[in-house]
Amino acid sequence: MSPSLSLALLQVVDRQAPAEFWPWFVATLVKLVALFTIYMIVVAYTTLAERKVSAWMQDRYGPNRVGPRGLFQPLADGLKNIMKEETLPPYANKVLFMLAPAMAFIPAMILWAVIPFAAPWASPWGRIEMQLAPLPIGLLFVIAFSSLGVYGIVLAGWSSNNKYALLGGLRSSAQMVSYEISMGMSLIPVLLVAGNVTLNEIVNQQASLHLWNVLTLGVGFFLYTVSAFAETNRLPFDLPEAESELITGYHTEYSAMKFSLFFIAEYANMLTQSAMIATLFFGGWDIPFMRADNVGAVSFPLVLLSFAIMFAKTLFFLFFFIWIRWTLPRFRYDQLMSIGWKVLLPIALAYIVIVAGTLLALDAAGLKRDFVYGAILFAVNAVLAVVMFRILDRGRIVSPAYGRLDPQELARLRSVSRARTHLTVSAGD
Image 1 (tube, one colour):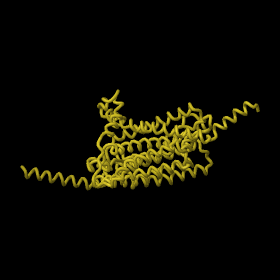
Image 2 (cartoon, helix red, strand yellow; image 1 turned 180 degrees about the horizontal axis):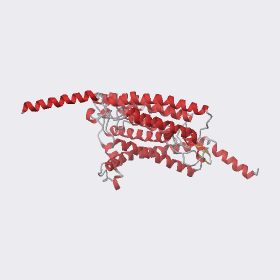
Image 3 (tube, rainbow, N blue to C red; image 1 turned 120 degrees about the horizontal axis):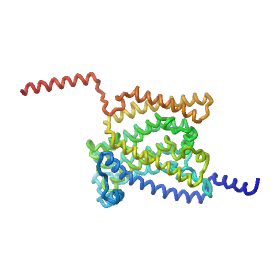
Image 4 (cartoon, rainbow, N blue to C red; image 1 turned 90 degrees about the horizontal axis):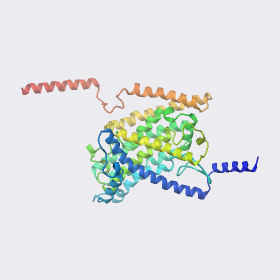
């Protein structure tokens, strides 16, 4: 082997090896600043996107006065909230009242530390992961920290010393705790298929099957997405706010930037959950029809391409959150809790058993984890989806119009009501 060829091979190996401390430290600082900047800009402009998309769906103009096409509207809103007067209820717990908005926002932002937003970079100084913290337990970290957001909301309701805020906080805690269980259960099939809790490995596993998890684990995707809507308090699960019943729920007593921080936390959670859905079920940053990005670090142009793919998928699911917000009505609170405990949780438990049994049978048959393996999982999930939506539901279990009253009893009560109305009209004549 010639010396030049040996040197070239050595450079390739060095690029795949982890970077030394100082290149790693500088790269981490750059990623931290860039990711935080992009994250906050996207969160700010998601508020504008919500108003624009709602205007488009309702055939009207959205914000269009501040800047070209209203692009400076988030800046004007931020300036307005900064300049507004900060109020503090006289009987509130001042410390917790001030800390609660930050406690609602911080967990959503921390989760981005482990979400891979691009393929690893084969830099001249070694392999650099496109994550702030490439933890080997990334998915467990997400599950643990995503459950902390409820504390900010509960403490906001309790510390306000307001009955409406307290009821909103209690509603939110019951809702989020209930749907956290279904969310965690929906991720177990993903772990069973991937055999790993590292988010990068989950992305690579989807590439090895040549099928995204939304196809091979479609029921799990449905369960996770519904739970994500409930966790972010978005319609049709925005019962903690419930303007018609609880004024504005847990942030009734808040004003100025503390008030707006709750909405920033909501949109931050939307962004985080959109990135999680893209990573767990839609291949994440994986470049389609290419295997080079799944066997090691790649060149910088491919890093940029993988980042663009991940960014596009995340923006699509942000639009999906907004789309559902302006399409579906709000559930009643008893329906919301019944769906979480009586529908999603039993389905998630049964789905874990079915997926585990299917994987055990396929592995016992000696099938390699390739396209055929994924195609069989897709067929199983297609059958389960038909059973779940066509046979079990029939518009009664999940439908927001469903009531507990028996149809025959409802018909009897309506006939009694008509008879009473007829008697009243006859007496008046």
